[in-house]
Length: 211
Image 1: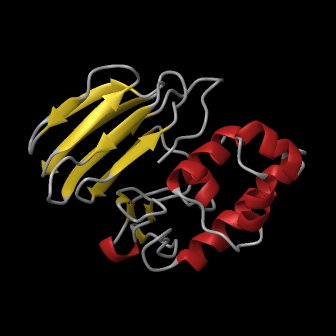
Image 2 (image 1 turned 90 degrees about the vertical axis):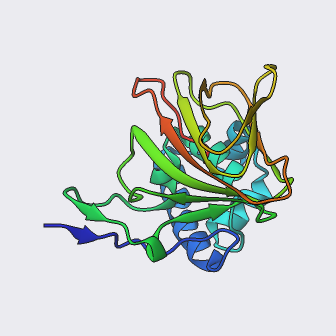
């Protein structure tokens, strides 16, 4: 039997930062303690300050996309596992108005998960919205991670590592290894939308995703 996605709508810079803060704070505290890490140790591993980790754990601060990725990677879990509790199996319906949404601190980059948060996924699909002239950078993902992006409206420029930027228009797609730093830029005066598919290497050294 199908069930509706039972996670609350989570928004980092859209409409419900308190809900995201509460969920992430509880999971962060649980995962950190289960791994026997102090805030100082996790700070050293993740590169996120002890003060910021403390604010996230107590629900006083909603982390941005990149912070979520850095913390998840340090804890060796997926971002999905950091944001919400494991869900039940079976067929799941994810209503549009209850999808998990995470935005950059400036709000210029918004990702909407097209899958239920919960059990770690080997394949994750997102709808991206990028404001005019906004640029969003990402740290290198786990070795073997691939990202496939297709622009559904507007334009996006994708830069991977030291490669020459690739300019994509509506209908264009790009597939790249995400184990290098990469950046998405909307060079136009209009909002851009895209679908992003992340395929994660499910090996013994796989780490958390970053979107």
